Length: 127
Image (cartoon, rainbow, N blue to C red):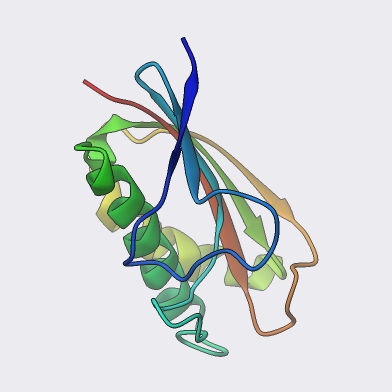
């Protein structure tokens, strides 16, 4: 079983050496995803809810590119720059996983740009 690199035009092309996602068998590994639009512009500067929504929409686009849905997500890691944003992130996050949410870890981290408040990586098992 080999891996297949996954890209969708709905997300900006990576500017570093990584793939948006890789598919190995029926398991999709989604790279750390941030709140950018397809042009690479940050969406929701200073707004954790807007950034969480855009980040999850980007993850959804990658999953849909291989025929999956958000229900296929089995695990996420959420990186927050400030835990004071935890409640706002959770408010939006739970709308994407209203039942049977994936396993999750949440950690505080410095991100690649000070304008990013959140980054999420995910794993999905398709089918």
